[in-house]
Image (cartoon, rainbow, N blue to C red):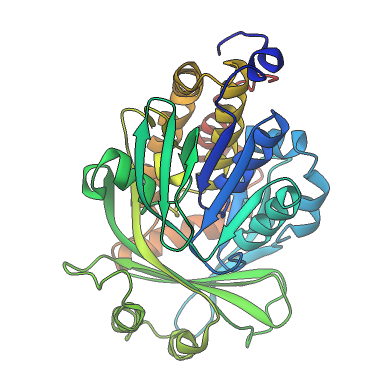
Length: 410
């Protein structure tokens, strides 16, 4: 971290206006800290309104410390999914293994889990009074000059900003414009994921059900009385539908789970009426450097660990905190600030990317025999008096990666 009399220096520098692309998690979190460090922030989001759907996400380790420093701990606790436990079930719905809350989440004391949309709303509410939000628009081009960046938008008039930050996810527009085509940086695990909201027809009460078949998983959980979330995980086909072809994506999910049994046919029928639909490859993002001139990246745009890693949200929160803090410590000097960001958080990111790859590629059992072994182990684990010791090989790397950075007090 660069040491500098930040507040005094910042008042004398031109680097005070920042454009952030993306209003999910990393973008509003970064906006929160930048505004508190004296920057003027605009966030542009292609969706016409805040996206409040999505799957459940973990907040672990030092990310919870970031939440506490934001003064949002009570809001997070109130939004907690409070999942009580869950069960692995066969095609007739018979439990193969039942897990308590401490086993199904593998979270350390103090960690939490919320729905992605709830977290997005909490962060938006914490920033909307200080940040300019441009919904229903997107960046089409960025031109760097010595003293700023000209941002061109799909709808708004072009504007100059001192700095531009891409917090726009796995398929980042800012990354493509400033760093190059997506295929240079995205690594696929060979797995697809789809998440939808469906009616809670099984009346699940803060409970999770998992139905595994070889190479596939159907997951159903509910944190509300009337609505549940269904998640489908399956092998990636050779040819994917276009990212804008939602009908083709739905058809692909339906074909992949045509013989899955259990409640799957009913969940697939509900897909067409779902108010939200997430479909994407389970992939990671790897870059040698997260900045180029006056443009930088944060969150999934810079270092997506995959949606099955359990670490993406935490990495976004920590990355936003460090990036804003390093810019403050550098007095707004983007070269020093971006260098400090890269140096300070690099090891934390690498450790979590490694963990995320292992989690994503080892999550799905590929054969009936592997499923049988997995569920037998889970069934026995719950009753072992030394289950904490047995889980240590899994929880230790997770805890270490989640806490692999000491947060500076910017």
